[in-house]
Image (cartoon, rainbow, N blue to C red; front, side, top):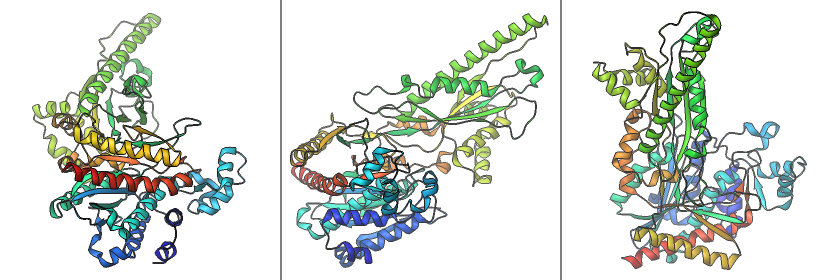
Length: 556
């Protein structure tokens, strides 16, 4: 391969820069065939490394199940003298390039987009970054083609210096990180296969997804010893239609939706209080009614869902909180409607009618139990919906299931159904109360302090990588009861988003993030900082790898 020949004699920083530039040039936008192309490219590159040329069985691919594009995970294994194994993993997909506007044709060309920004007087900081020569621009430069390049270069280093390893290093490159995480989810079975067949003992997984400043002038390089989790709580709101001439007699689901949104969206009271961590409140990702065309009838149903980060909390607790909020919202709307109806009667002088605006609130599991007790075959209904709507977007498929279930309810009462939909990302972190995990924390802390003295960099260790990450799927902290609360409130979990909970439990790999450093990920000004990412980070990861394997040997 031409790339290997170009970089084989370069120093490591130059290797990383050249590999990053090449990978940025590969258009691996999430949901396109480019995700397959970059996997094939990386696999071919690995085969040209002499170690793997001599051991081709140590490079392989794993195709994603039922993936229409044929996407695949790529693995490469350097075998050392023990079963102790450190995993290096990165994702190969990027977000799209619509944000580049007129510069879309240069989005994948670091030199051309840097040249554009060097004359970009509308933002002085970006222009100075381009002129400095310290930053590489382009889609995927920081999220996270540079991360792949760092891992590939370290794999190349260890392949030439096997004497430095007291254990194994497993490289894993996954697609589909930017939305559904199906790449890493699929990899769980492969990691368990390797664990069993090759008797690997996974002591640590190192992701190098990007870190970025948290405030103006922030001097820190952040290292994360865990990953934030994510739930997608959803609200199916079923009202009672009314003609606009009788609007006060109906139950408008958009009114309830608005009240629920007001109480949840960006509400810091729902954010977890964890000292010195970047915790975020829930945020609304979707809100709309389901009228297909104009008429003078109020809406019957409304859909609403939120991004909900979980740090130390769990699905069971979150469901309980959201049910309470939905109930409070419905009571508030009922009270408001009664107040407005009373004022209407006062103005018009009309006699009162018996009208109820009461709206019932249930979880999905409560709905299933209620309908089952009425003799309704909920299982066959939901499976039929899945079978007949295989191309429907996963979240809308969940709403569709509930819609069909409610059609079978003879009561047709106003109600709110609270449930979970994909994606679900588990949360995990090093638990320093556990002796073995505390020692891992101490190893990382020691290496960071040594690197600070050597380089002058300032590091800050945090418990949670604050953005969604594939690292979430390598370890699971929630109890069976907490996971069961998620699964039973997730329509057709096994078919729509079958996260292999038991497989993750069998692995439970401590997962840290030692990220490339840059700014503006997912923006057209995305850029990676070369002095840290290409020069300091690779050595830092190598040192942690060696120390972690040595520490595990000492603990035997």
